Length: 239
Image 1 (tube, rainbow, N blue to C red):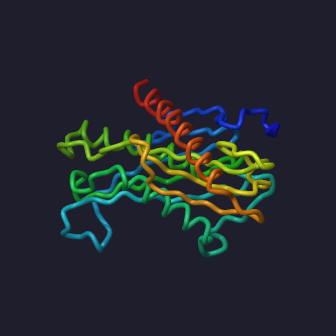
Image 2 (cartoon, rainbow, N blue to C red):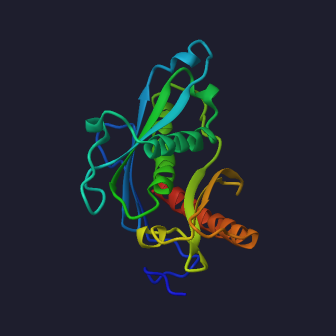
Image 3 (cartoon, rainbow, N blue to C red):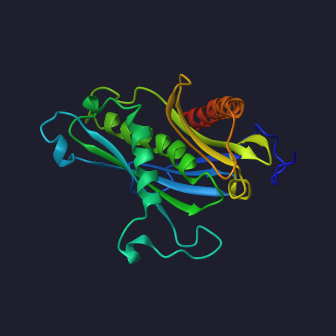
């Protein structure tokens, strides 16, 4: 089976991570999964949501948006429509949960780190690219807090990354681009930590159910892909 991109079934798209992409954010990353580009900016604020006041812990959250010309045709800004779509809310909650899974919120103190993930160009996998890039932006923001001695201990207790897998023309494939995603029989998103444990799994069959064998194969491809993504994260943070 030939993929539209010519990649092997288990092969990621070219990955790029550019840190300190913007001037003002405490952590900023431009991440590329093939032709998908997401700008992830981490902001530190000395406040917490109302439900955490007095709890002696911090909060990590995320917001997600797709720019109007991130796709082939212009999409109206959600601010103009007056409300966020269900897809947007679901994705930004996923990013927030994924980041909180590797943070000791008590060590963060009573402050909030918000990671804004803005899709500049979409070619499939925007949520997985957002999570993978948001982790790097979060690490840089926390490093800033440590450097200026606002916190005493590193609250980041692990590493997290995300990738998609699916069934395209009967074949299990990794890291679907738009051409595959739009025609896939199954589309799944995996979020995993550095131990290879699952943080979250999302999966949907589109018109044709997937088998247990295919689910296992997708999980194995995702685990391999996430190991590669984490190596990209580590190399970027070490540069």
